[in-house]
Length: 116
Image 1 (cartoon, rainbow, N blue to C red):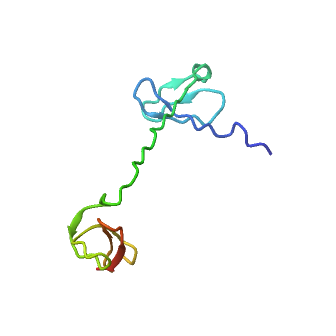
Image 2: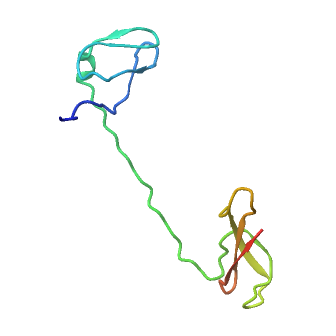
């Protein structure tokens, strides 16, 4: 059994009220469920929709060792004794438990975590 032509993912709108048209039949008349306007299937045969999708180019700057990976706070790095570390938080455990905080030294890049 071939399923080709059974489902049409294109969406059509009623020219009278703007409601969604049930376009489940490949031919025949279509009735708007909102305003009951009857539209012949021939009106949709010549309609062609063309889509163009454009993606922005991802620009990732070269990371410098001293660039922060998030907000910076006063916290002593256990590796190099620098007094500034950046941080980021994520909810990794259950919703009724605290979040996990990831710290990164702004000088040497040392990383550590803390469960709050």
